[in-house]
Image: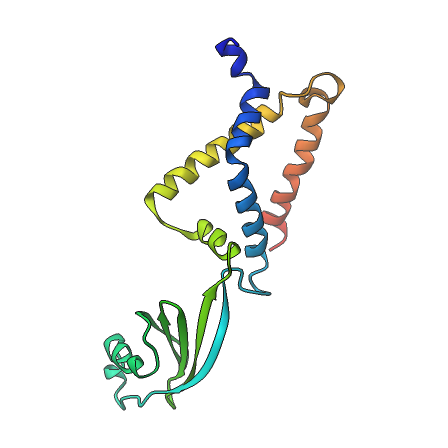
Length: 184
């Protein structure tokens, strides 16, 4: 096979699609799940919930991250990750749990979490900041552009992009613009 024959639109389209089919499926499924994250958490699920109580210092200045890190050792063995203040509530984040504590009473609840098998890992792909993954994702993005562009030149005749495909592409492009600019 000649080199220029191999790099025809059909061959390039097919081989890139074969190479990335797993990632295309993973991004598609996890993307659909992330679209519905207000209905359910596609990454984690709660295994157990239990009430907790912390004796809060009277002075707000003493309610530091290090205070909560030390106080949380009474009810969890997991690694402490962060503390946030949300209105009248303290949120404590651990490796596999999070706690909500009322800022007035010190009463709250801790939820122990587990990652949803497969789907949870796939959703992480959308959010990870790993440098190597970002480079691979950028290459994947370029490959998706090549797949889209080469797909326009596969068919010939009355079903070609030049005769029919451009109309469908134009119609397909209107939907993202409608949602971006008109429906918010």
